[in-house]
Length: 216
Image 1 (cartoon, helix red, strand yellow):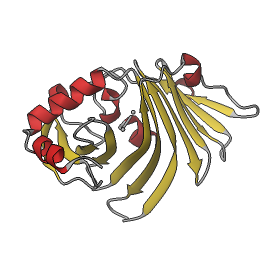
Image 2 (cartoon, helix red, strand yellow; image 1 turned 45 degrees about the vertical axis):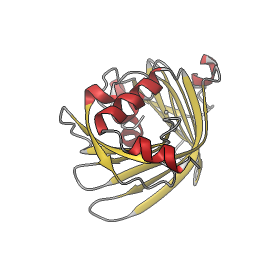
Image 3 (spheres, helix red, strand yellow; image 1 turned 180 degrees about the vertical axis):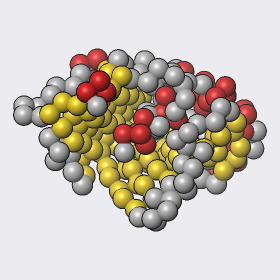
């Protein structure tokens, strides 16, 4: 679960406008998407995450809220079916599972090698991926399939669905090498609201066990 989030790592258009944007080349759309996210300092949204295992064909679904602030700050709060949090202050990543009464602490990734890093200002879509057109799973959006230019051990490619007029990301899907798919859909997207750094500070609940990379 932590890997799928770290991979992923922050979101009714006129028919004429949709057609014009869809006619753009994949490279042009990737550049436009990158240009938009270079102007986004922070954003927040509601999300639904679903995962389909490639071998076992099992499916899971979770939901909650996400907030992202450049550079590298994130807070994912899972509210259903159980409480979990992933918080990054840009230096450390904290993964808290309420049911397990445990928080895992690790260093924040500093390379643009995962799909969600461009949302937090550490990646470049046009530079890091080879884009092509893809069928969008979300009405009113268009989609790009993004294949990493450098082979990644944890995923094969991702598909990003976005609004063609605003360039807001509405969905992200990653496919791993075993055929598993992790999909995020975003609603109630809000950009550049001036999120405080205090929102990305993890406060450890009392009685929770702390596990660090060095302690494994």
